[in-house]
Image 1: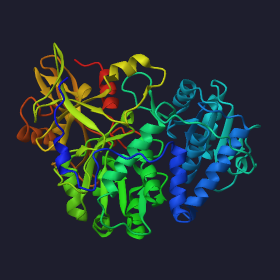
Image 2: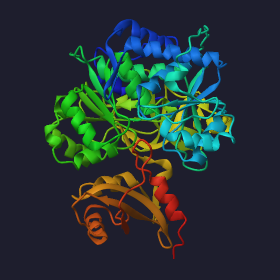
Image 3: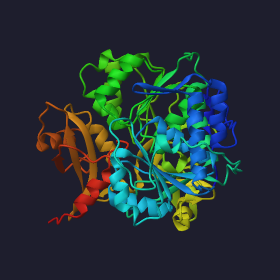
Image 4: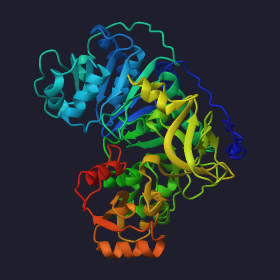
Amino acid sequence: MVYQTKPWLKIYDQRIDEHVNIEHHSLYDFLQGAVDRYKEKIAFTFYNNVWSYNDTKEVTDRFAAALHKKGFKKGERLSIMLPNSPHYIFTLFGTFRLGGITVQVNPMYVEREIEYVLNNSDSEYIVVLDALYSKVKAVQSKTSLKHVIVVSFGGERFDLAAGDYYFDDFIQEKGTIPEVEIDPYEDVALLQYTGGTTGHSKGVMLTHRNLLANFNQVGDFSYKPCDYKPENLKMITVLPMFHVYGLSSVALVGIREGANQIVLPRFDVKEVMETVKREKPFQMSAVPTMFFALNSQPGLEECGFDEMYYISCGGAPLPVEQVKVFEKRTHAMLLNGYGLSESAPTAIFSPPFVPRKYGSIGIPVPSTEARIVQETVDGFIDAPVGEAGELIIKGPQVMKGYWKLPEETAATMKDGWLFTGDIATMDEDGYFYIIDRKKDMIIASGYNVYPSEIEEVLYQLEGIEEVLVIGVPDAYRGETVKACVKLKEGYTLTPEEIKEFGKLNLAPYKAPKEVEILDELPKSSVGKLLRRVLKDKESSKVRV
């Protein structure tokens, strides 16, 4: 494959290096470095409680010592099933210190999903929220799980089964911590289970090096060109840490920058608005559906979003119309980005130092190569500027592979390149634009139809809060376009009105032929709209 030039380097801020500097050897080494720099500065604010950087290291080390006393060894897996909280960080880095692998378990999983992840990862340890304890105990006998450690944020304790511990009791015992040799390139630090488009989800293996590279890449892009950082730098940490976007691109970047992270266990639109108004944070990241919710709220203008250094969005394509609504109401700039679990996650981002282009996901972060390729009979070639093809990326943040799935790994990673499955374009300045997922493309009457293009148009119709477009079987066209819509509160639109709007603004083969208005659209744990759930639902129907 002939590699194209990197036009985006011409617009890098002079303070940004082309290659990321990875200062630390392991993830625990990184935490130690942050503690040495920031000491008694507040690291985490969790409602009425605060922890300094020194406090964070102390609790982390006590957890590591207790875990070692239980016999935990390098390479063993420990699952974490918690909402956002400082305890997530204590558990994570305590496990890293012993060379263990942390397994991300979504707190919203049902028992079947919990059982699958525990068995697939061979986890013998889990740290779980007290409210979810019964779910774990219901499947424990079907797994290799031996030790359950329970986190409680207050309130009345209940009795645990013999051999289980509350987190605060678990870390009381004094103990030693062995020195563990970490190979940052080979030693896996995190298993991040993907949503999985078919069958079971896959465990993405992220090494110490992968994570160290990525949060430094994001940190360089976000903060290096900043002319002013307050001594008491605050950021809102509301994206779930159990997803690598919230963990790496938010929480770990916050530790690197010495931020006081205002930790929110879940997204509540009114709580976020009140927190922004009260705390005056420097930065916040969210996913598109969070901005949809903010855009529908009265009083958004008075919260002070315009006083932030920058606000970023990732996790899914961000419709331009929603960006414009947010910016018009808040007078803040909303910056988009792109990543995958397989890239730890950020690969491309709109940093504050470059001119923003609506609809673009930005430019590659340091040490990252990105290409748009098209497949031919002779292999893959670079697409001409502006033409669509598959986005592929290469960089130190790209995963080691899929856990126990060498064939899946080989199909996704070729010659060091991660094939993302996303259809995209690149312009002459090196800005990238996502068109759609390769698997989501609709072929109607022989034409390629990209759902995101139709969604962008429908978002211009006032009254639509969320929309997902899918292809459904059609005897004449092969597939036809269906739009599933959630309306804003207080608005009334009929399917016919939405179809008519589509006819006026789209080519005939792109305009939705079917429209269904729903109370809610399916979302992932991080608020990403799930097109595949609607596609699966449609495929189970008998259509005539």
